Amino acid sequence: MTATDRALDPYLLDDEVVADPFPHLARLREAAPVHWSPANRAWLVTGYDQVAACFAEPAVSADRITPVLAQTPLHLLGPEAARAFQIMAGWMVFVDPPEHRRLRSVFRGAFGPGQVRRNRPMVQEAVARLTAGASAGGPVTDLVADFARPLPATVAAAWMGVPPEDTADFQRWAILVGDLALGSVQSPEETENSHRALLDLFGYLRRLVRRRREEPGSDLISAALAGGLVGEEVGEDEFVAMLTHIAFAGGETTSNLIAVGVWNLLRRPDQLELLRADPESARGAVEELLRFDGPSKLSVRQVAADFALGDRTLRAGDRLYLVTAAANRDPSRFDRPDELDIGRSPNPHLGFGHGEHFCLGAPLARLVAGAALTDLLAASPHLALAGHEVNWQPSLLNRSLRSLPVRL
Image 1 (tube, rainbow, N blue to C red):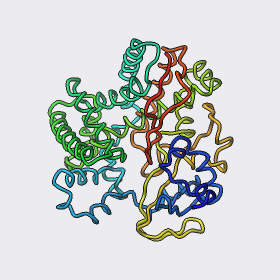
Image 2 (image 1 turned 45 degrees about the vertical axis):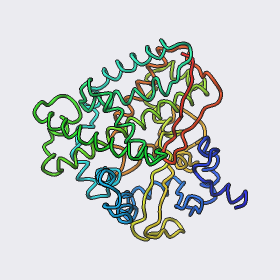
Image 3 (image 1 turned 135 degrees about the vertical axis):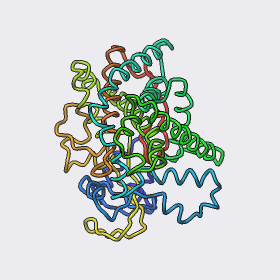
Image 4 (image 1 turned 180 degrees about the horizontal axis):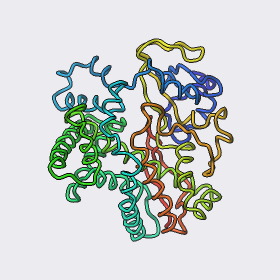
């Protein structure tokens, strides 16, 4: 492959691309917003209009589990792996309409603005506690390990109604399940541990659901059960399977949003000072951080039936990467797309997806990230980077820092 070929067909897990994907994606988007990539063995869709069209295209399927199971019979996987795949196949993120609508209906109202706003005091308390703990550790702290990662995980556990004494186990299971779902497992032993964690999490949440039927509270599970659809429109095991996805998905995404967002703000003092001067601008800042350098780089899809996208014909069975990181910097849709502007309006980014698969947990992610930014900056007026170099997780899907040393 020549240098020109590599420039127009970057392997998305190359170290250089993981560290800074945007120049590579911009060249590709300009040359071919719909491009078959031999390097990635998938269609790379990088234009805003084309990505949005794919999110709404009936011939594009979110189901990536069924093809795997079709190629690998369950009896060859082993009992734990087979059961883990069956649970994951019920996650809404892997299900197409109309099944997706049926499953999502059980959470109608549970993710509404009113329900989410009730979490604001709990989020503020968690932010204050973690900020104080990070400050007590010395002048330099790892913002990822000490703040960005534990904050959403703590909020997710409390919001789902996990008792405090079970929180550590819940968070450990959720992290291992996230490693499995996001392709971070590196060995057969790690894969086996993640499969077992998913089964343990499923069993725990099934017991918690049954407890909440008897003793409802103000948590997500109680709110969903109050809607009356669990056991009617949606089976209890289907509901529990979706809860295993919620347990890790919001925490991982929000922690990456906070860490990468703070990193970008600290490198742009003008935007940081705007946010310090007007904490109410946090809402716009979260949206712009999602657009500019959001926690999700792409969504994986499967072509279920031949269809035309622009002047290209995509064939059934092809893999499709909807590269939202590129679409969110498309100059045909955003003025000055490579500049961070926390006052940007309108801001129709695709950071939470689009259409039927728009992120269900977006309201909570916005609340937690907004509180984290405003409260952290208020508690740490001298917050600054403690070094110039950062290390990125080699992830196809996520934009994720391994660590972020800062001075508080």
